[in-house]
Image (cartoon, rainbow, N blue to C red):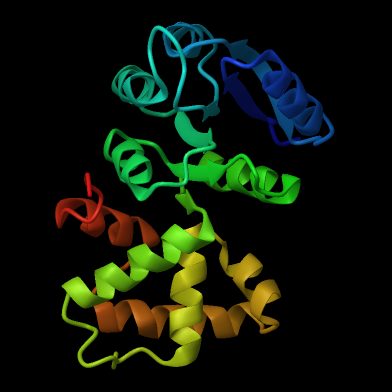
Length: 217
């Protein structure tokens, strides 16, 4: 039997933590292993419990989510941090990714999207909410010179697959979303990555970091 995804909730609002816990405890593959009321407590609990995923708010007392995430990734690199916040500005997103967060989700998101994001980052992948994921892909294409006068060497289907890859979808999930077979997804994905000189979705995010796409703006 597969071990459940062990999740720590870090948020300074009691009612928010309680609500998230209730949502997560319904899922058979997710286990809530603790709650933290501020960033400092989150860091301490991560060192004790070694959760797979931390749901991290940004604005918290004593130590905010940005500083806490940096410390968590430095001390427990195998723990993935999924930001769950009210902040919609891209400055926060880029800063959180810069210090090591694996995902960024708005508190107004649907429950299914939260569950999906937890599973994605637990696999060691990256989850970004759709609007920013789309912008990140576009900036990547423009920066690398792939986009010239509005044209790219990618087919419309390859562009769709790239968008979903950056959001953290697996091949199977992409196939279901686009109503195509997994083998067709694999074929399009292979051709697309070859055109861009990439091999994994991690390289896309890492490239964006190296080229300064994930930064203060």
